[in-house]
Image 1 (cartoon, rainbow, N blue to C red):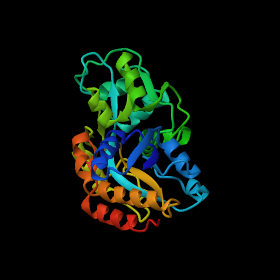
Image 2: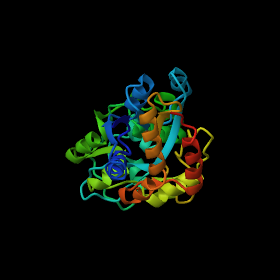
Image 3: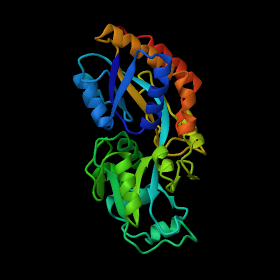
Amino acid sequence: MLVNGAGATFPYPLYSKWFDEYAKVDPSVRFNYACIGSGGGQKQILEQTVDFGATDSPMTDENLARAPGKILHIPTVAGAVALTYKLPGSPRLRLDGAALAGIFLGEITKWNDGRLLGLNPGVNLPGADIVVVHRSDGSGSTHLFTDYLSRVSREWEARVGRGTSVKWPRGLGAKGNEGVLSWVKQLPGAIGYAELAYVRENKLPCAEIKNAAGAFIVPSLESVTEAMVAASIPEDFRFSMANAAGAGAYPIAGASWLLVYERQRDPLKGRKLVEFLNWASTQGEAMAPALDYAPLPDNLRTRILQRIKTIRY
């Protein structure tokens, strides 16, 4: 049996591992996953062209109201969006919300701008142009990054705002995490954002970002976990971890969700999907740290397993 899904690129390295491992648990089912971005995942679950969607940004009330049935958000893991760059010698780079907003708004255009030098004393930043790279497709990573920028910069919130797709004031657009990193690797002076697992896989540097407590934090499993623990998680599991409180919390962190209908149209597929969700929420979580994702805390997983029980097929 083939179960079809589509959506987020952010958790794809982990989902790919899950699908391979689950084939050993239940050889009767195979998962076909189209890695098309969170916007595509939301669109396809609404159109019922897939059995499940995947997203790194919660669906809006407006989109949920368009659905032909009740859609559940099932949190899977949390991860970080890292800022990576191409500078001579790959120096350690520190950035805060104001500097990031300035760079992506086009107000900071040179690497040796005084605002960047002030954040990085002793670092030899070149006088080169800053080349901004961003996602061109609908993306949960974009939502997470722009949600963070909207929380730390009133100007960003007023001019651009948050979303899976926004009107970027400047920069080169690229499809997927892979596309962004391809440009960053090629272009001297480039800066772009991508999911941490992809940045590490490509052996690229990560900027330290100033968090709500005033500390400069590198994205890591531990700093994402701290952000998740600090987050307030409502009954419907639609929540944000951006700029979370916590001394060691990485500020550009977020969860990922699978999107499934509470009432499944195909009884057999519905049962197979529920069995997979139960496995992913228990055994699958143990595979997350090795791929740079933070597993869900036990108290949240208990709530999720109860929610999975409400799925009808």
